[in-house]
Length: 134
Image 1 (cartoon, rainbow, N blue to C red):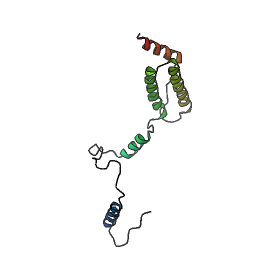
Image 2 (cartoon, rainbow, N blue to C red; image 1 turned 90 degrees about the vertical axis):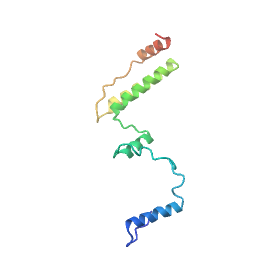
Image 3 (cartoon, one colour; image 1 turned 90 degrees about the horizontal axis):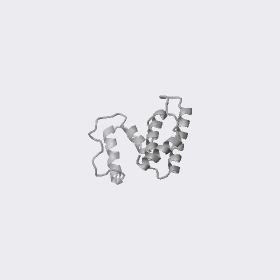
Image 4 (cartoon, rainbow, N blue to C red; image 1 turned 60 degrees about the vertical axis):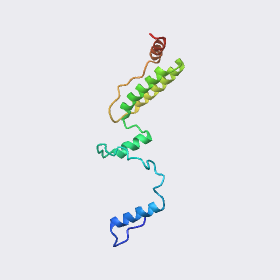
């Protein structure tokens, strides 16, 4: 816990003293980004910058579930195109379908979802056609 500001000392000189003492103790050594320009220094001011950075660092979805599932569907379909086997395709689509069912059954706030489960056999057939080149 930091000490209390002594009476009779201005806030500015008390804060400056704390910074100087922390520098002398080496508490600012080895911080991330040391010696580099401050990222986004000249970007337009955004009062929510810190929470956006926190969400990005923590990889927390900022979208409501009904919108996030659309993004998940797009990512899953990309993984399907990269799949090496029919079993992989089925696993990806079945996991996506389970997530879609869960979102459809539990979302009570935010936009409603109109995403339906995918026909696993139809996705596998399309994957085969893509692999065969036609």
